[in-house]
Length: 294
Length: 158
Image (cartoon, rainbow over all chains, first blue to last red; front, top):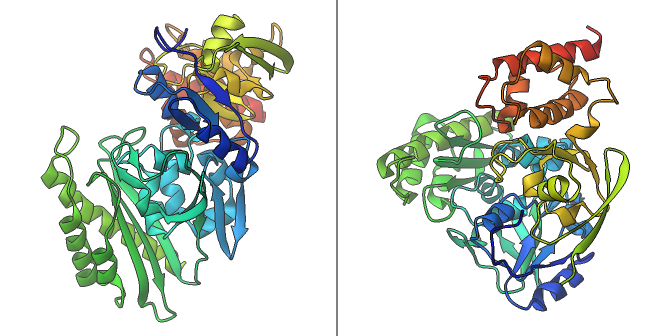
């Protein structure tokens, strides 16, 4: 069986290096799609939503499939699967909240393939792994015809299904910085079921504290409450200088609610999504605090 | 463009097939290799009926391109029994009547086998979460969960 009728032939490439991949994408006669885990692309192909002339499988490039230490932090290949990153104990210890987001995507089977790069570049406002990366202050390395560049994760998605990547560009890897001694992160999402669903609201919080337990840095990111995942700077500011007392948490939640610009649909009204964003951010902040104290 | 010539290893044996780019691994298994044990339920990665192992990882064959199998190792439901000897999971699925129509069963067996290889002594909750991506519209799941727990106990020698 094929993907419906009238599908013109799709070329397929398996570059072994970033340079080769850039060349493949630049040489495509028509639209090219990058294949990482394929958990979104194959569904879109089947539904006829995309009809590429070329599919470029980037998983044979060592850099795309590796998790490495770099400057005390981590460099994670864009195509590393959830199952693989989840098995990395050092990463789990440093960034449990980032993994919480990634591991909430789909089933065990999906985890065998789904990647951070794919989740980001698919451009869903409800992408579960994106708020955690934004809260972590992660950057990504992007390769393209003009060489490589670094971008903040929050700057990669432009809106639903759209990225700021230029033609021929693709995400190579993510960099997550070194964690200081007292730091923690967490991600929570609201869904009406217990498993296998799309976020109605997602909230990620990453915190750093000094030896006295005063918050020195805080980054709060919300998913599914705007056309793309948000970095809510005012929410982070509301926590810095505090010990996460109730007043500071409520100020943070208010900043989260103020930042929301959600859709209104059967899965959640504007009012509901806005209220839940504040509640989830508070809960995530408390978990991040516990982790920082552990 | 000519079809892709894919060389792979399926259930320990070398296998080759020809496919177009857009054919999924599930299409290739069923239509090119006549290995129809893996089922197509949703074709969108939601139901798990096409669960196979790809290089030792549990995946949905409907979300893998056939051409991606080139040089890979695939394990399917056809490799679970050893000749006429059923795998403990298969025996316990029969004993517990953990299937009715049977379309979801190959996926459940392959997924449960992957779990027990990683975690020989799972809790019921762990089994339920691991199998959350395998849908069954007949049994109501309880019999499936019991069958997996019983198979795990037998395999541990408990």
